[in-house]
Image (cartoon, rainbow, N blue to C red):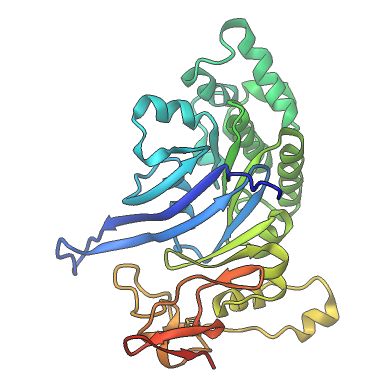
Length: 338
Ligand code: SF4
């Protein structure tokens, strides 16, 4: 029997709740930004995390690095639970997990040359000190397709694509194993998006990187991901191999998202049927009972507004939907989906 490798990252029942503010604040209400997220990520793999803005995907990414403190749950990276580590061990482990942010302009210090920003993680982790630092910075710039001459430029002197390459160079400075890419192409022009996607793929191949690719753009996620997880209202509602999720989506929400993606083939594009979801995304302070998607779901039926579906296997992927199996009703009776 072939032994199954331990995942590089195992996230278990991760929750990030914030105290709610505003008129209805009672002191006991919480925004459930991330509400019980679990997934594994294996070495060299890319997991795409998709969903509408506000679904909790970026908060999940930030919580993995404890840039936002998780409320509960576990984040095991290479066997160590990041959520329980004290400052010193956490700092050492953070060297192996890097993040690339959506807005490279906001993530670079406008007062300093970009080389200064890329050197920051080297300073924090005391790497490539003294005379070794400048060659290392030049090497990083060449790795991401930038001339080392640009090290002395300020962020405003670079294009959006160059700035994002600088952000990627900074993430790679500490030689991480895992890179969390939070909407890395969302702020770029379409032509530059393709270049950055190609760069990310090449770097993964050459450096053996593992990616968590967070995006709302399903076409981009399809290009880079081995597996895909779909989030809705702080939870994963479908997860599985990319081909399975895109060809035979098991959750009505995934189907609706995919129906909105243009098809680069005119006849199929003309025949594409768009599933338009009615209503707004419910409040993460007061999520609906039962399936959280039921107020907007075109397929809802009897138990959907009372029984919360768990993720369950449907072929190669998993989906949290009563359409795919038996649901408990009335204290232990079971009933099949329609
Ligand atoms: Fe729709 Fe019901 Fe499935 Fe939820 S459980 S996605 S409401 S069919």
